Image (cartoon, rainbow, N blue to C red; front, side):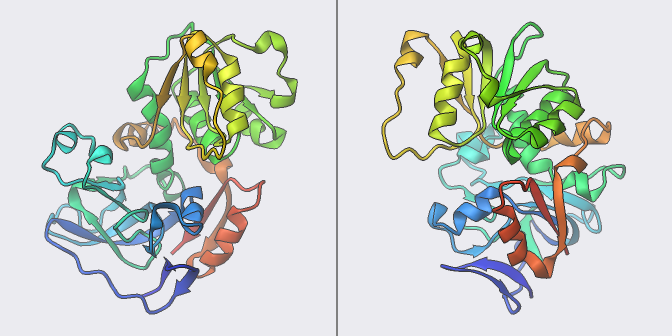
Length: 319
C-alpha cells in the first residue's frame, strides 16, 4: 500500500506493508489527513521515530471487533496507554509510562491507505460535521485542554501570543467558548482570522510598556525563547502563563520574574476529543479559514514543502 514514511529520510513508499488488525483494534481507511509541524520535526530527528507519519485524520472504519464501528466516520486519540496503570485508569493515557503515540512514537501513523488504532481510541464523527472540520479535532483538542486545566473567569484579561497554526487553533477554541481575549502576533493577515472570529488583535510591534504585567492569563504558542520571554513580561504578578509549545533552548532562560512576580507556569499538551466534537456538532467551530491548501495524497511530499512556508497554516491531504 501507499504510505508516507520516515526512515532517516522522508519518502512516499508505494509498497509499504499493509497493517494487520489486532484484537480490539479497528482497520481504518483515511478520508482526509492534516500535516502537523510535529510531522516536520520528526524528519529532523524528534523522538527518534521511524515509520509511517501522521496523527491528524478523519477516516472510515473498514473492519473492527466492534461491529457498531464498521462504516462509521471516525477520528482517533493519538496516545495508546497500557490500560493498566493509574494514569490510564484516570483517562490520562498521554502520561502512561509505557505509552506509544500514533505516528510519533512506536506506532505507525495515518499517512497511509490503511492504518489501525484501538477501538477505545476512536470517536464517531457526527453526521453534520464535514471532513474539513473533523480533521482538526486533534489540534483543537490540544487547545481545549487549557479549559480542563484552569478556569478562565469573565473578568480575566487574557492573551494568546503567537499567530501560527497552534495560536490560531487556540484562538478558534477561545472564540467558540466566548472568551474575551487579545491575540498577539507578527502577521496581520493571520491575525485577521482571529478578528473575523470576534477576538481582539494586536501586532507584537505595537506592544507598549503599559501593556506589560497587565494580563491575568497569557498562553504562549510561539515555541521560541523570545516568545516565552515576551509572554512572561505580559503576565501580571500572580498571573498564569500557559505553555502550549515546547521550547528548545540552547542557553539558559531568565526565570527570575517567575519567582519575583509569583507567576504560575502551566504546561499544557494533548486534550480529549469529545468536547471539541460537541462544539463542532453545534456549529461553533469554523475551520475553513485555517485551511491553506488541500492536495491529493500522492502529493504528500509537496505538502511537507508547503508546510514549511511561513504563510502556510494547514495543509490537508485527500486520500
